[in-house]
Length: 167
Image 1: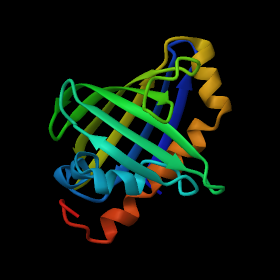
Image 2 (image 1 turned 120 degrees about the horizontal axis):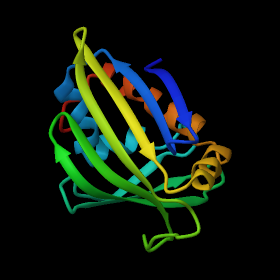
Image 3 (image 1 turned 90 degrees about the horizontal axis):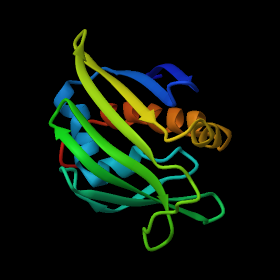
Image 4 (image 1 turned 180 degrees about the vertical axis):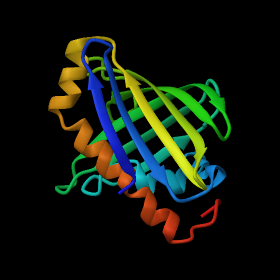
């Protein structure tokens, strides 16, 4: 399993997941840079993602929805703040309605995804910072740890399938 550590800090308002992949840095980066690959790993297994818009560049926006087992859809967005290909990107991640307008009743988090070379593979650190303790507690109660772990753990299968960077 790629996820090697999960921590949340209610005082710092952060949730951090660390993962290790047996693939080069550039290959792991391509999963996030290519919307067709991203949608294979963004949602948990039971809630596969469909990426609608994808601009992984400063000022860009990524929109997606996850489809549940009963056909229910859950919409979300990224607003991209910074990109340092292939090492990191920063974005605001939030919940949305079916038009991809922000759902302000649920918390938006600031996310920093960092990728480094490690022992012939790649270490990924996914850090989400929430605006309040209540916001972090809310997403923890919604199952963000389980969902994120399930999603990240799908990356190994995509990497081992030999998908090309443009698959």
